[in-house]
Amino acid sequence: MEKDVLSTESMNPLSIGLDTKSTVDICRLMNGEDKTVPYAVEQALPTIAALVDDIVASFCKGGRLVYIGAGTSGRLGVLDASECPPTFGVPPEMVVGLIAGGDIALRKAVERAEDDGDAGVADLKRIGFTMNDTLVGITASGQASYVIEAMRYASDMGAVVGAISCNERSKTFACAKHKVFLPVGPEIITGSTRLKSGTAQKMTLNMLTTVSMVKLGYVYDNYMVNLVPTNKKLEVRAKDLIQKIAGCTKDRADLIWHECRGNTSAGILMELYGIPYDQAAHSLAGAHNNLHQAMALCEQRESMH
Image 1 (cartoon, rainbow, N blue to C red):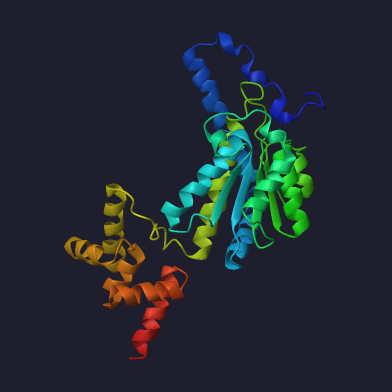
Image 2 (image 1 turned 180 degrees about the vertical axis):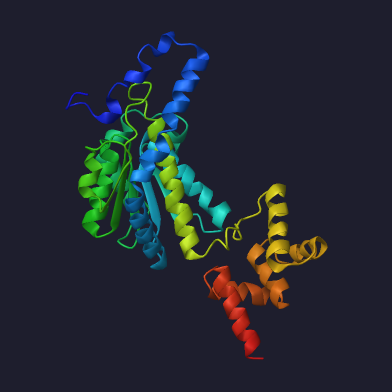
């Protein structure tokens, strides 16, 4: 590999002659390359964990996690952010995804949007970014001005800044406290970073939000107790959680479900402690929707009577 060629732009010797290979051989090659991605992410685990701790600290101060990226990287940030409200029952403004070119760029590439550094700063100002927020810049090559300038703006403000990149010479690392380097190597189609690079980025984003929400107490044991039941499948899951955690019958869980107003954690408290919905919801609010802490509050109240 030539020194002046970014690793994300270099040629993969394993895929030379790609266009002459059989369909199954191309699939095998892609699958083999994809198997290396978890090992690339593994190398960054200590940095990812440190970034998670800072994200949790931001949340505890009333701050947000803000992703910013361009192209595939930006789309992945928006995707991860959009999954947090239904999964963890958090408000949509708690995790925000920004993409160069705006929402239209989610479906259609916007020409030269990633080269507009001023737009990155403007987007942070538009959402009222503060030093209590954490900004995570996502860019496979680490060269997108839209991301770099936004990161500089956030860093100068005193906010925690993280960078996720698959290029060891990413320009985003210069303005980041947490430098998450994912060494996936060259893609099977030269420069097509929607492949291994995108997969590695998505795995990392999964960790950032999932582990943060676990640390905040929005998961009970390994149960998704704060889910928002937006369809029949999730409604069945919510009833099942009430039955399992509260230790009641299926019929009783169905009855509680109709009384808990779609709040699974409240339903669990109602059954465990024999309290009405309003009291259960009040306990959860006092515990910041942490079911463990809400249970402790209910037990404390029980012991006082």
